[in-house]
Length: 131
Image (cartoon, rainbow, N blue to C red):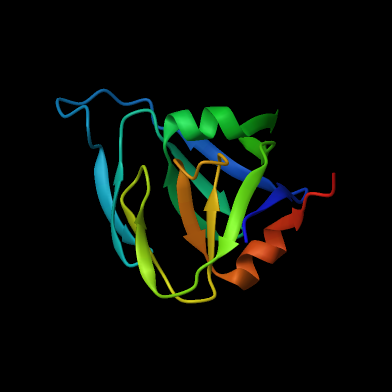
């Protein structure tokens, strides 16, 4: 069942990569979440509780808010559901592999901007939204 969640108070450190390159589609690639991820010009590098990854510029701009220089908080709601089987999903940065029981999370109710994380990590970061 899909439910709506709100991020618990938790700051992330982030910096936008404002580099111009000949290849507008890729600054660099890295391996994370079981697959190759791509960082594009103007994407954000985020440090979240010791984990480092990139977030697509449009996704970051629409879901995070500046708190103090270099520190941001996620202000947007997310929608999530428990994975019924192992699989992978396409994100804006690449593919993310997940296991049965992990959470598939989206920044929109139609699951167009989605990612996955362990259930334990998800519930450390999010509370169910009570209307």
